[in-house]
Length: 250
Ligand SMILES: N[C@@H](CCC(=O)N[C@@H](CS)C(=O)NCC(=O)O)C(=O)O
Image (cartoon, rainbow, N blue to C red; front, side):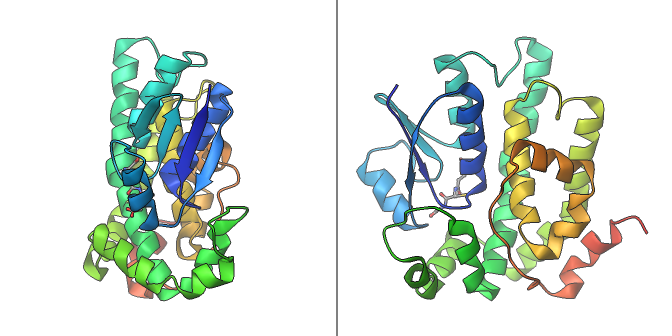
């Protein structure tokens, strides 16, 4: 199988797909792209969308982590990312959808708002990625990219403050799914990876890390995406973090 995965360093849905490819034992070549530039590249390559992750397997082109998880089960059924039992499958699909739409979108907004306040922390997400320019130059010139990402994803301070206020309820929901066995079982499923990656990005922010790490949701994330890159020092206003602080048992 000739497989190429298009990623942005530190992208949470891309890390979810990387972990799924590893679970399936599908070798792949990784193509690292800069945010925004990624849109032009994927368009030129005629992918169905312009977002990361996008995956080419032989002559099949896929965009979107949920589209990819489903296709991976068709291409290589074992081990399955979705169970055969229809009720359980529906529950996992629902959790995966929530992970993509609610959790991951909120985490992305929080991340880009924090990156605007501390551009240099982008360096910590790059790791071994080959983005085509020296890391120092990429970071020094990242301001327009950060501004574009904030614009593309409709990010503003009030929205991020609302995301942070909702975040404890997101963690409660994940903890409950772990307790009931929907997540975190012996057989990893697509929702495990989607949700672990969203939580992983959140934990890469020091502002959020300690309130998440000791919870089942934090441990679950570490199990499924053990080496989530990145480290953003405390940058968010203390009053925005109050709901997260209050969610930690005394
Ligand atoms: N919800 C989509 C993610 C879409 C998305 O916004 N991806 C980001 C990376 S996390 C991206 O492509 N950013 C670059 C851009 O929008 O310019 C999925 O799960 O595949």
